[in-house]
Every structure is written in structure tokens, then in C-alpha cells.
Image (cartoon, rainbow, N blue to C red; front, side, top):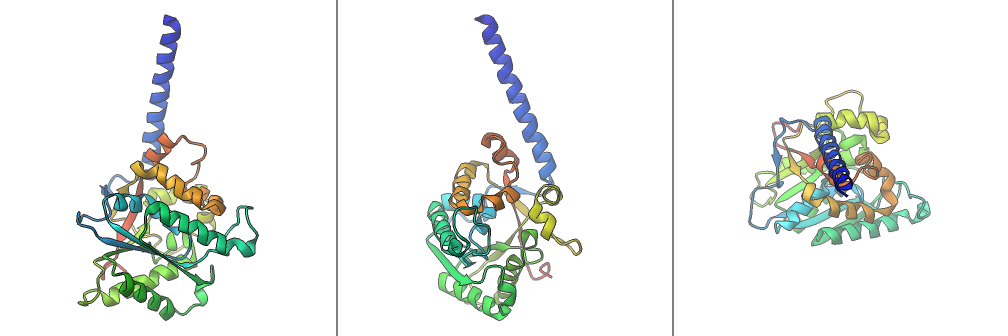
Length: 287
């Protein structure tokens, strides 16, 4: 019995050491230590309203941990999505012509998990926003701001659209232009616009592992903005997984966003992929 107990103790110690090594090694590969790490997107403790402005159902997953942290701290969430994502993969669960309505229902489930006070879902053409006038999207952006009076807005970056999706870029560019044009006006409520980005190390790994990045990330140009800071998301990982599960048709997409999630234990994975990166838009750095 003593021998068995010793073996069990040694086995547990080895597992702990291996797990610790995976976490430390994974963090070193993915994260740049010079980028400040915060526990919240914003500093205010009084309730603020945060509005997300994205092109597709599931785009919010890239900031899911941050949104969960905001909600837990008592802030209010409003989600705006311009398309129903009808051009995406179906996961073999529905016919292509049913995908838009299915993804609308999936996004509604995610909004419920997040406790969003409002979901605004529009029906612009998925993967067809390049054919929509910029002024139309800017008009919608301003309309949503006037209607919901957000204190802060979160979108993708306007340079790349995270991994090169033209819908992401156009929607984010529209919001960025509205923000910069209206900022400083007495009746404009938005204090800051944050754009989702990635660390340089994450980009390097994504270009090695993620087919979506390999296909679409621009080969030339400035690339994604260098993050101003990251938000720590480990405490919210299990709920973030529930959000991803709600997007049942889009599991293929999430394998690009979070590679090997299904193969690595959540305890380890949540401590490697433990932050979401942001860049704050201002008049002097937006162009």
C-alpha cells in the first residue's frame, strides 16, 4: 500500500510539473510580456454601457471573456450585428438556405448567456458588405449610438479585420470614422472606441496553424495594430465555452480562433489562451 501511495504521489507531481510546463511554455509562445495586462476593459466602477459592433454572429466570441468580466462588474451590454452570417459554414447541421435564421437563434442564445440588455440583428448580406455604401453603414453606426447611448464601443480593427475578412474591416472602418468625426461633440456619448487585435506572437502562431489566417491575412501592409493592453479572461473560460457551444454551426471557425481547444484540458488551455487584446482608437493613431 505504501508503494502504491508513493507511485500515486509521484504520478500527481509529474502531472503537475507537466501541466505547469505546458502553461508556461504556451504563454511564452503566445503572449508578449511588454503588453500591459488588465482585469477589466474599463476602469469605471459605476455602471457603464458597452456596445459591440460586429459583422457576424460569433464575432463577439473574440471578446467573450472581456464582455463576461464587464457584465459581472455590473456594466450593461448592447450587441449590434449587421448580418445573419448566412454565407458561413453550416457544420453539417442545417441546409445553407436555413443558416441565416439558425445563426440568428444561436446569437440570441449567446446574448442571453452574456446577459445583454439588447441585441440588434440586421440583415445585410454576409460576405457582401463590400457592395454596401460606406455611408449606409456609418449611418447605421450613428443610429445605434444615438439609440443606445453607449459609453464605450468594441469592434474589430479597421486595418485587417482580425484575420482579413472584408466584412470585418468595413464595419470597423465605418464605426471608426463615425467615432473620430463625432468625438468631442457635446451630444456624442462615446468615451472610447476599442478595437480587437492580437499580439505579434499570436499572429505568428496563427499564420502557422490557422488556415483562415493563412488564406486571408494580408501579405503586405502594416498588419494588425499593436495592442495597447490585454484583458485577463481565465476566470470566464468555462462560460466562454458555453457561448461557443451555442454557435453550434460554427465549430470549424472556432478551431481557427482557438486551435487545439478540444485536445487540451480546459484547466491548462484557459491559462494559456488567457487574455484578449485591444487597441484604443484615437485621432493620432487611427490612420
